[in-house]
Image (tube, rainbow, N blue to C red):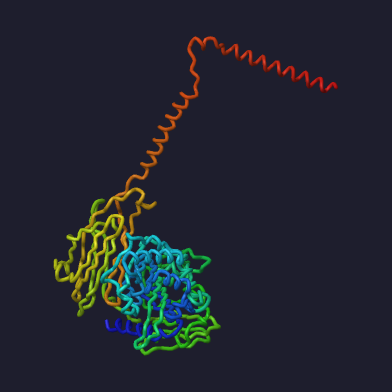
Length: 583
């Protein structure tokens, strides 16, 4: 716990120190157990508010700055995430989860407006503009997917008291959104070096979206140092990914995994059943995996970004000082006093390579224990009703955890608030666990359900939070093309001070109609209309005669007369042709 709070304190001090600099970037590498690597890319730039208002952005991206000005947005937080963070194996989340979002796309911002209606209009402008900038479906964040959190989110920037009263917090999620390379490309264009130099040159869509877990974040906030009127606008861009070392080392021209040849298999020869055709895998947990930057990211780092602030080491790796690490020529290594962190100062004109050879593990970098473990799933059965269960565990043996649990449910999940129940260690202690609650019910096709609960969990305890809900029946036009897949439900947001945790998203099955029935109705209707039209058309154009008139018409005689007429014309035509030839 002390290590975790000291890390947050160091990060906050680093952000305050760099607030006066224009631009800086840093890559933090941290091996995880087993053969995994956490890579955290952090980019930060600042501009004064006076320059920002005059549209003199410098290192601040102009495309994003003009959107913020047009939508009167004072603070912005945007997240693109995929995968699931395994807290039990990987420890605490990077940056304390403060730069992590739920699965898909998550956006929240403080918009300055006089009324709620004006704030909603500016929120709509913001989402539509960001949708075009980042090639995402943010324009689908409508009123049914927008909430106004009361307890969960607090501004991280420094806002004046005169403007703080007119700020409106709006939050929206798109758990169904698929994050891909189309979102990474605009992200890189916001950077000063734009992926051509510096640590951003390592970012590649094939590597990023092949990761076991990845998150892209953009944070814009005002920074006002104490006893100073020189306020700045700070933008922080972060990319965190957990890479599988073995999978990342596959060559680009042969990305398909294939069986390892027999001569390259690592077998435990001490087993009595080891033979030429029988191999027991060798336990490699006592040895660190061998890897290099070129193997992980496909190529070395293309020098330092020339626009980055001098004095900040752009590459750091968290491994014990006893572990062998080799770097390319021209770089300078610096070790800290903790015994687990070393950083490198790069040459802007030379490529940088980092090599970690395979060796025995004599000491491992400790994993930070998370403040809370959270699981969330559906319970119940049937197409009419269901339930949600959240298992929240406090791993600390001495300290209680006070946090806020927030649910943003779609309008077709009608929550029964009277069924909300909290059990601690299997006992019903609703009043002792739930300290405070805010609930806003859903309105059909207008807004979703918002539920915020302040929960206190004693040390070394587990709380199971459950509630029931009813499934609504949608109109057939409201179902997506893959309706049988289900509907994505946004993750729950857990806030513990400056630490944030997102649970996994849920997949809700709804009663699905038979979509072949409209087709059958169309076919049947078309058939009836065709038969009716043919019958009426036949009545209109057919000539009706009496029976006695029909007897006067000898069909055979008519045919003979027509044939004789045609035969006579053919004879006259032939005679004319012969006379023309004789002349």
